[in-house]
Image (cartoon, rainbow, N blue to C red; front, side, top):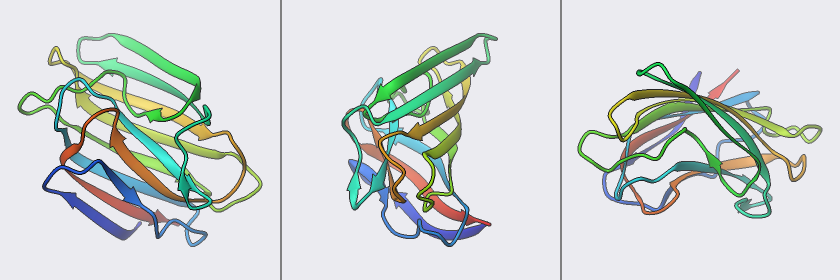
Amino acid sequence: RTLLATTTVASAVSSVDFTSGIDSTYSMYEVIFTNVHTDGGNYSFLFNIEESSAFKSSGDCYEYANQVTTSGGSHEANASTGANDVKLHGETISDDTGYNISGIWRIFNPSATDNFKCIMSDISTQRNDGEATRTSSASYYQDNQNAITGVRFKWSTGDIATGIFKLYGVS
């Protein structure tokens, strides 16, 4: 694993974008994000990919499936067969003190032009009732098979208040 870029958010931003470094050098790229807080409450943490110099967030261009396990022992699922953004976890995140989201996001063969882009993530957070949750998800970009050159992380509403985001290339 090779560290390619780091973004540390110390004051509110609308999104964290990695628009360089994702190319044909590595067969897999990871973004590890830690201690990400929202500046508001009850929001969903999302991502979009960049293709042809534009972030894709319309036209129902993503499919995803999330499997959530909680410390209370429940198992939940949420999914979409046509979404404008990909939701990275099962429930909305509170802006109460201490609530945050951390996880690993992976894309495989982003520069290949013979496949739809497979993406997976593993997320840890707290539900608004205080239960710990783990969300494992699979998603893909279904509009075309063009090379992917970037990724954007954002909240469904509001800003990213704080957090650390690291982009890695994996051989």
